Image (cartoon, rainbow, N blue to C red; front, side, top):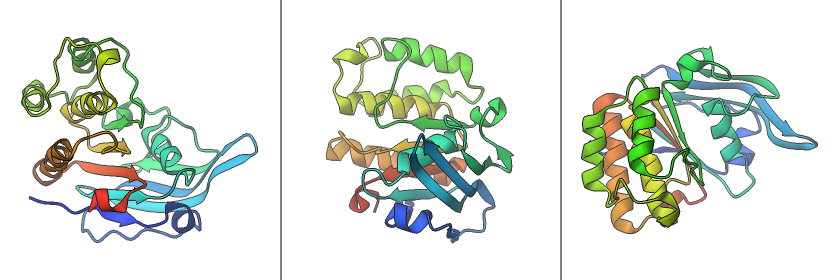
Length: 219
């Protein structure tokens, strides 16, 4: 089933005015930001954001650099503590909530790996995440042209991104957060990734939130 992402144009101006994002879906919200703000010293990265994201959907955050997209994703993943307001996953606070984080995967713009190759990273994910699906991981290994033993420091940016997305999807999260997911991918890999995400949403009810500067990439 092909799913077209819902998008939020001009993230900074739209979201930071505290407007509620209405979802065209009967699914209850899986993620909700209630008047959330985040500051770093004197810099206010997000200002009183209120929005909700329905389950089993693909949602796009569109905005320029510095608009707050990455900050929003890190708040949604529980990486950052809100300065004020609440970020809720299934009506539960995300920050310092291990049970919520079991069901959320976040792929940053520049993925970080604890070990040197996919083989060791997949073993780590298998030990950490209850939803890990080894069969799906092997299926994804057939789609993405990666070698399990190849060191990450010998991979291109696009290959490292493929590896990070593959690990995140195989963990079978309910919420998948992707920061500039298509950056560094060639056209074939972009289409492969879109098909994989659409399948996870359509067949398994995953929710995908993608941040990007490029609206065309999400269409």
